[in-house]
Length: 219
Image 1 (cartoon, rainbow, N blue to C red):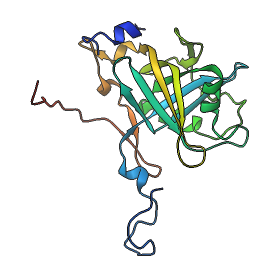
Image 2: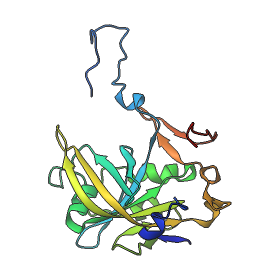
Image 3: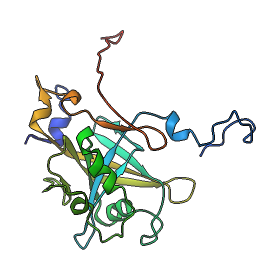
């Protein structure tokens, strides 16, 4: 399985809001549309481990890349569990260990991803609960999904608390990337080989099936 270091990643050749108007107006949507407005969103399937070695895996759709040099990513956690201190297992584990891994979700893994989204006790291993194979990261002490299309090993740079209860943004620097060989075509990571899953609003999801290319005016 190909593995890229951070130096290789830097190689340029690789590279509940309030709704306006009368809330009682029957013309207004009966459900908060915020998640449905900001779509499609990529899904970070975040794997972590706590200080006692208990693995955790959970999906987050408030997720994106944030910088090229060095490569950086973020995801946001927006609620809390009663067995953690004002947050979820992922953020608690990252606070403790300073590392995490983001696994890419493919369409065929949708059921396993959904299983891992449950609010289980902090000592539950979602890898086992969802029937997923585990591999170890190379640059950090953290588990990853062995057969994911790609996995990004990350070291924590900062956790930012946002307004509201239990809203945290986790920022990380990518220290290595695992790419599954069958996703590569002509030297490029080809999403059509696995159809990444994306999050829409409500309980809806979508897959990437139609890809096209545009040339920028300054290319």
